[in-house]
Length: 257
Image 1 (cartoon, rainbow, N blue to C red):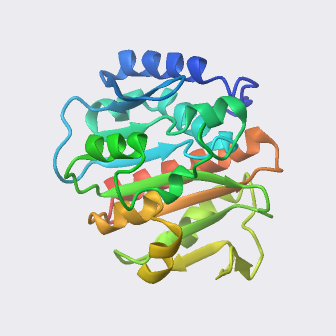
Image 2 (cartoon, rainbow, N blue to C red):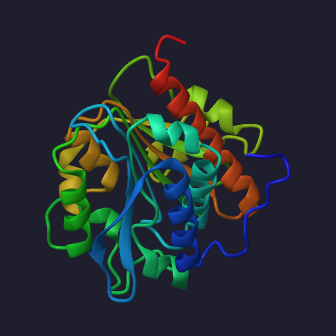
């Protein structure tokens, strides 16, 4: 990403977003595939032509439509990494909730929080996404989010493979956005912008399964939810999320460094 980057004012333009992804796919030799049809918009994945049962990298964005830095960061990162996309297996989801993105709404067109819908197949779009994942065990999973109440960037790191990466990811984002300094974030203990959580299944049985939990339960050893503060300028939020994506992928591909 160049120093002169400015986030586009078309961050809520879903058709334009997919046009950009088609251009990336053409340059990187990826497949753009519709995996579900929504009420107004089709949902797409962008994937490597060879996607192994183990070891691919999964990144998604836009499950909440009022969090545009995630969708913008993912395409911005991809536009600068077509060579990497040619040689490393990826499953990328540009926007899970396009209706929400276009309408700047957290929920979908039926007022559902799609990030509380992974416990079963009652939501057709989420069931289709799960079929797209198949039985794959990803080596890394990132879900890109934002928080209106955020006071800096923070990261949920599910307790899995060690050594943990959360502190290093926040350090990578720090030149763009400092870590959230709150001690409690979303009713959970936080340290320097890091919420390293264990799984309380009784809690999630009550509220519904988020995407990150589903990926964790499917065996992904490193699952991160990235949260940028939506009151900051969009270009800073995008830069911070891209920095985290880059650091995660660097560590995945070079585990000894």
